[in-house]
Image 1: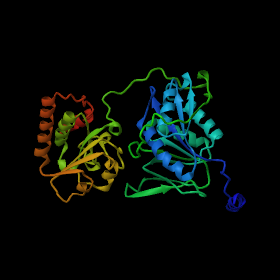
Image 2: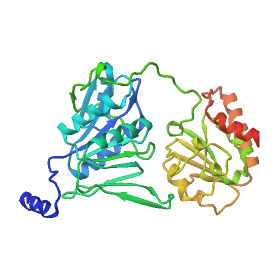
Image 3: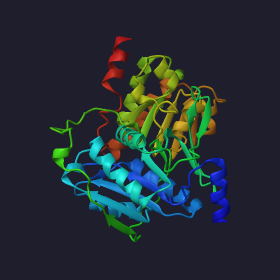
Image 4: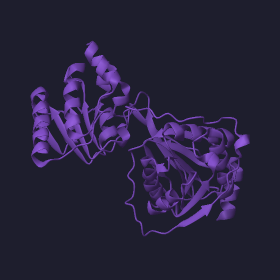
Amino acid sequence: MANEQSQEQADTGMLDWSAYRGVLIVVEQRDGAAKKVSWQLLGEGKKLAAKLEAPLMALVLGDDVAHLAEEAVHYGADQVFLCEAPELRTYRTRPYSRVCLKLIEEAKPEIVLFGATATGRDLAGAIATHLPTGLTADTTQLDVEPPPSRLLLASRPAFSEKMMATILCKQYRPQMATARAGVFQALPKDAAREGEIVRIEATMREEEIAAQVLDFLRETGKLNLEESEIIVAGGRGLGGPDAFGLLADLADALGGVVGASRAAVDAGWIGHEHQVGQTGATVRPKLYFAIGISGAVQHTVGMSHADVVVAINKDEKAPIFQFAHYGIVGDLFKIVPAIAEEIRQRRTLFGIKVGSAENSLSADALERSEAK
């Protein structure tokens, strides 16, 4: 069988990548805390590895991050490569990519996955330029063909989000992709689970690294839809930017943030950072309010993984009700303030405190609303 495969590869001009086996997830962390997308990718990677009958591996880089290697095992990794060094405390492209390239050369994973974050995109792109392979960016669906092809089927929106394109890397390894946060489901954390942790050495010393980090300034007040557990989103049915003030009031009462459909963003009612959907954020909150949103595919693919969806729309036939766990047909300008007031009364009655929702509506959105 092996000889037949080798002959087939020779006949088609393909290189022999049979030494490459396994799925590798690059765990992203900051200040010793892992990004949720890393555990989500481990959950999806477990499915891919099972279909390929191959191990699921993880790579953890940083300084004083051994606890994350243990967490990676608890979230499904069979083997974790751990690289700790002072030079890796803060992300820099060159030292991080050097470690990844050396590990890929030695461990030979057939698939390498990164979160589609600012760091993940930068790191994956840098690695791909040094390897004889391609990179599929911003994927929302992942699957594999079973052996013998073992191809990664990396799918992402294309043609103005009207179609899904599945991209293959048939002749080179590893197959690489970045994946959106909130799309995949992390496995339940199993603290009793055991796996192998392998320490590897950093490949660069500080004096060899051209870029230096002098300080790290955190941006306060920045919206983070992908990490939010409660989202109150509005669409074209709001009729204008002023109505987002009602949504912000409800979000504050719930301790959540404000989201929006593409139609509302394109109309200039609110900033793009609030957009949920194929061209915005893919979210997985515990509670999602869809207010004045019709339920176009472009939007629903970004919020369909919410635990509970509450839809408010005056059109009882709106497609959004097909995705909603609870639906309210009526005037949102009466319903939303009533819900917000009821929530505040119940919080007062039971002495419930909700965390501040300073980021519920960005300063840019508030300025836009006031200008209108």
